[in-house]
Every structure is written in structure tokens, then in C-alpha cells.
Length: 328
Image (cartoon, rainbow, N blue to C red; front, side, top):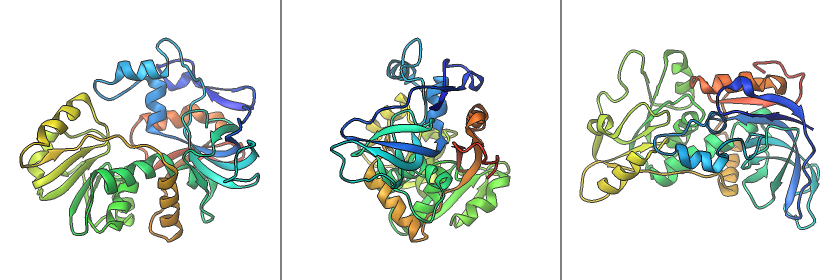
């Protein structure tokens, strides 16, 4: 079985494609033949040991202090079930599925728990498009609906509106009835507008925080602080960073007392319920995935370089079919 292995915490060139033994599904697991897998910001952070402020040591302890505890990266995937454990009843061999797992999706085969974050693939999507859903879609759904508690008529600013999480956040906030402003670079203005943003700010020419009056500022890329965003918030507004730190944790506690704008520190997780809700909205035509580039597995290092550059549009995906051209 081919897999994308990593052996260092330094650079993407340390990624290699090699043969490893195929996983064996346990009684409560499925074996999925992966057709496509996303390379997410989380994959980059795990590989490069680049964690938001204050969480470096915790990240290293989780992943392996001196060497990778699990050398095959990859969380988000789409593929076809090829085997099921004896206690699995929700899925059958031949089902097209997509989902998220803790590790191992950058491979031809991955074993995943049937009770985990896995759902039937939306019939209208390709495997490459479905692989782009879990991390960005689930994060945006939880941050907009649950943590941000977006309500109809509220004004929401999404910073990094063309990225892997931001592109979903714009669509979900619009679906929830908000007046959405998306901040992005010049080349992505039309994309963000096509996703449903009522207003698009080109951050290369003007500050997305100018004007203000926002009920929610959602920063997906970590380019603002509560201090800089506070003047742009309403008296009861919320500053919601995707990349939290020890500092935002403290600010979240401090601002929860009394009145005035507050900070919300939150961490999302992939769930089956979230995937099924996203799938339902996609089939209804409410949401759509954005795929930047599709790389063949042999060029997984190039996929990591694009993600590490932090200027991708939507998701970067690796296709296991070597015949898939870049940009497909």
C-alpha cells in the first residue's frame, strides 16, 4: 500500500511516498480505499510542529517528542468501503463515503471507526470535492452556528474568507441569515462574492476592520488581535479567532464578566452529525466546496508547500489516482 510518510518536523521536502503494510480493520472499523484526501492546515502544523502560541509542547507530546508517533499524516478523505468489521452495521462494502480520522488518510487504504466522523458521500460531488469538506466545513459550521451563535440580521466579518475554513464560513453565515463581509486578497474577491458575501474587502488596499459595527469578527488566519478588532465590534460583539492561544483563553475568561465586546476561545471537532448536515446543505445547493489544486500522490510534498504558504483558495487535495492532472 502506498502512503505519504514524514520523518521530520522541519520541511515539506522530508515527505516521501513509500510502500507500507495495509491496515486491518477491527471489529468496529471500516477499511476505506481512499480516492482523494485533503492536505489541511492541521496536517501542515502537525508535520512542521508549528502550533499557535503556547501550544508547542502540548503538540509535540501528542505527536511524538523526538520522532513522529504516527508517520502517515492525513485526516480528511473520500473513498469507497472495501471491508467492514464484524460489528459494523451502518455501512456496507461498496459504499462511497467521506470523513475525517485522526491519522493515516494520506494512503491508499485507511481503517476508520464506523462510529466516528464518517458519512455517505454526497452523490453530486467527486471524491476530490468531498475530501475538501470535513476540516473546513465542520470547523466553519461549529464556529458560526455553535460558538458564534450567528443570528439572522447580524453583521459578520470573515477574515481569510477564501481559505479552507473561511470559504465555508462565508456560506454558512449567509445561510444562517447574517449580513456577511468577507476579507481576502485581490485575486479572490470574485470567488468570495460568488460564495454569497454581501460585501468583500480587499485587505491589500484597505483594512477589513474599518467601518466596524460587526456583531462577530471571525479571524481564520490569525492576522488580528482582540485589541485591534475591538473597535470594529458592537457593544455586545464577539471576537472569535480560529487559531486560539493561551492569551485568547485568558481573554475569553476575562471578557465573559461584565458588559462590552468579548472574546470567545473555542476548538472545533469533526463529527458525523456535522458531516451529515454539511452533506444535506450541499445536496440542497446551499453550500459548495472550493478546491484550489488537486495533486497526484507522488507530489504530496508540493501539496504541503501550497498549504504552508497560507494563500490557498479553499482546499488542497491529493488524488490517489496517478492519472489525475494537477489543477483537476
